[in-house]
Image 1 (spheres, helix red, strand yellow):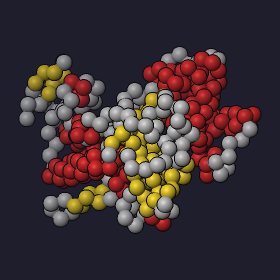
Image 2 (cartoon, rainbow, N blue to C red; image 1 turned 180 degrees about the vertical axis):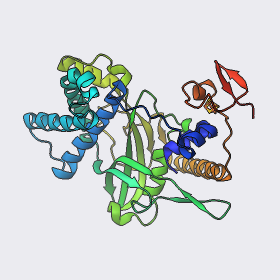
Image 3 (cartoon, protein in one colour; image 1 turned 90 degrees about the vertical axis):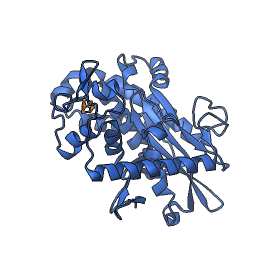
Image 4 (cartoon, rainbow, N blue to C red; image 1 turned 135 degrees about the horizontal axis):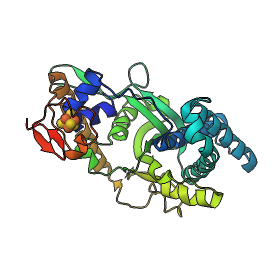
Length: 340
Ligand code: SF4
């Protein structure tokens, strides 16, 4: 099971069945829209930091070379998202590319400052968890079967102390939504918690160079909605970047590893007590909660339960592509909702 399958099923089992079982998906062609700008920023972060920390051993090049490196990474990402000669390339991208490069430079600098002020180093990028890859944790089901949670961790930062490899997992998100602790009970944004269960399993010490233990997880969000007017100048880009990026997640107490420099209060992931800091015991309770959600959801899926029951009412139904075929009987903001 993946996070997208889990969230879709919890949103509405009928919607899940239409999309994942019957594969009645939206076939409209992908475009480089403003939403694509978030994807672009995330791809830049992925490739730039990978280059710095896996190819260059964590040594940042001089400023001029660094700008050239970012420009080259930016160009390759734009070529992939909007290949030359395609309508999306000649449309939005053609007049945005220079400002996109500027924004990417400022955002990369922002994230680099967070990393350089911490005791954690990025060591793994886009780590795939699943059969034949990094082994996923498996949850037993009541019928004797099991379910695994698969996916890809965007970035894993590690800090080693006394034989323990403290893990900080990072997920790049597009959009304005931030992680809230209350999401856990709702089954939302569970991927980093579930990845952490796989990463910190017994038997992974040789992979991480120490017994893996959770230290933090961070959702780094790029809100493309705020990019409708891209910055023209570097000064504007600096302001825009801080408006565009947000960090949310959980810090687990019980280690001495700094998650950011002492004076970098704008970063959520700092070692001081914050609303997102939890004890090891609280974190264990979160893990038990998500294990239960995965097991319950997998058992419902296996039973074939696919009722049109939106968990968020109008929010679930408003943009649903399957409202015309779900045969719901209760009108809800002009869209039908099933009574059961
Ligand atoms: S319109 Fe609502 S009830 Fe119908 S399939 Fe979509 S989310 Fe489910």
